[in-house]
Amino acid sequence: MMNFTEENKRALRRVMADNFLTKRAIAQKLGMSEKTIQQLTRNDKPQEVKKSTYQKLMQFISENY
Image (cartoon, rainbow, N blue to C red):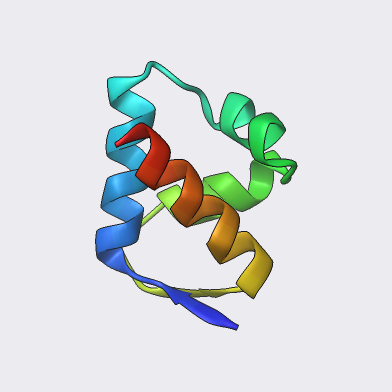
């Protein structure tokens, strides 16, 4: 398990806003459930995620930031 930090969460929300993306669009693009994206963007508390989920999210953030 990997720790998705508050900085990671802020970066994900910024990418969403800058690119006018919905949680559903990101979930479909990354092959995740919309509920996972909702949980990750809900607050700034660090959250444990699977390594594969962490890698997908970090790659998405780095490509779109």
